[in-house]
Image 1 (cartoon, rainbow, N blue to C red):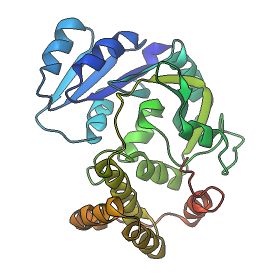
Image 2 (cartoon, rainbow, N blue to C red):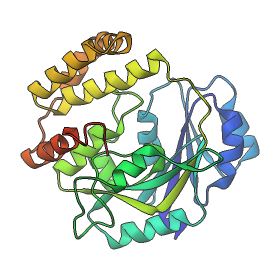
Image 3 (cartoon, helix red, strand yellow):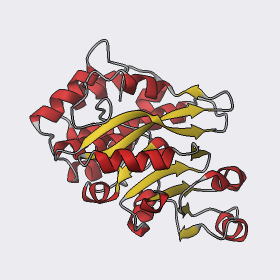
Length: 285
């Protein structure tokens, strides 16, 4: 079954993590290197000769995943980061689920974090998605996902444009999720398909908070109604240093976002508003 799926790994200067994670994948791997300066491509070729390595001359963010998906020749692609991997048997299960649910474009798996294997909080929210569950999908419907815990139908992903350079990295999943739903594809959370994520401990810096808020605003600019965009903008301006920094960073990218602006169908916008509404205001499945 794993002959029908490819793992695409995006990386940059993370060779120590790859030493652990690459050996754990149970399907062919395409590694896309985002302009590493630590010798990652050479080291991967030396220690993992079965891995196909694609070297990019610069850091293109999450767009690197598009390169890997285009290279893949299997109907399904599982994403992984340099510090994540899929549980034993998970990819075989994912292939079965996608084979038996032809409208499913994105399978959002259950992510277990760290050596203690804590459930990722977003997965708990997706399991309790207010969007319900369609009869032809294998789990609760979602309008977002964690890329390193997702398996995609290759043709649907490419037709949806993959990830884009406007958002670049962090929160890049939502725009794609909205666009796939807009043309009738299904996205669902499937808790039986499990991935492991062992992120390096990092502090929740102001810069990281600002990047997340910036990318949320950019996604809104590309797809949401103007009142929603303006409301979020005002909220960020009142949110302290990180929010103000997010707004300044967003302004630089406004022209690029507006060139890609396209309103969502009414039913998708309604579903997205449901996720914005209390008590789901903090939920972004």
